[in-house]
Length: 467
Picture 1 (cartoon, one colour):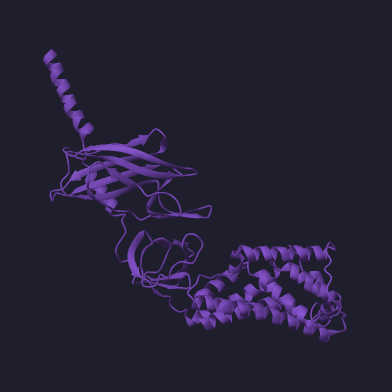
Picture 2 (picture 1 turned 180 degrees about the vertical axis):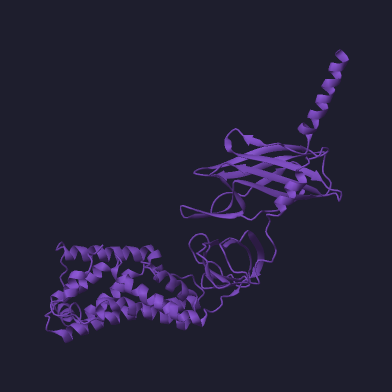
């Protein structure tokens, strides 16, 4: 009886030992992170190389990260106890946008296939560091040890092949892919003969921060225009002739390509009409933005004080205001042109990024409000008062200044249609840039400035209150 018991014990130990010492870590879970489980398996190949598979299982609502995590997170990494030549292979990532922060990674279950070159010791060990995030982020270490003298299991080959099927492709998704850079903006153009379904663009930027805008699709052509900074809000270095690695995914496929960045392609002529139409609509809508309404109220206040029978004088005042608006927009176009020629970063309302400018404008608006409320009175010399009474103030120069001030206050606003028009202008040829800014000025002038006022000024009661 004792002999039978010993033989049974030996058989049980023989069945248990391969599982406990196999090239399979089993599912590991850290005490301080119950939201993620990891598993490592390895198998030697006849060629001398070794295949390694890292499985990660995440609870719902949790994610981990790609090799280029984006604006947050840390890519998974393994600190090996022996010097090894390991090649990570990365599945197609997803893009996560939370609270204005864009990251790239994975949720649910994901497997990372790897390859190890050269001979290995009998025991393969190391520490896996994995960053997982939900409402909070947890950085967890998973020590592991694999017995390379034992098999990894019968399902390893299938699991490894399935993981390899989720990797990025070197080509095959697009028939044309190019990147161009001009004036702080990177333009990526891709053509796919089968058309686009739900494309996503992931970029790997070196020492720069690339904010991805929505992708624009027209037929089989996809275009993305990306403003580029150095990560601190300053102008990025000139990216022309540099190499850029992009991952473009669509329809369950993903392609990784390395491009040499050239000059930005000119805007197609067929889009000029749409760009000008967007500029006209955006300029018109600027009149009802909160930042412009105080100046509009000022304008209508001076209109009420004017005799309704002085139609010629009123028209001249409106034309002076229109001239101030259009001239200011042309001045903005000139400034944008000079910045582009100097390869500087530029954007709509860039003067409001300067704290000194913001301080001066805040002081002007406080003094302006105090004067309107009767809390402050600024006394001028008789010569200055005479000049303002004849040329400034209620004169044509005053109305010109009101138009210029309205344009200045409108620059931090991005009205509907305006963002599209300005985005096109910043990367478009210079003639189109000037045309867009001129058309925006005309659009802003349309509301009330080009319409001749009728008896009793009925337009005054239809203007919404400031703010």
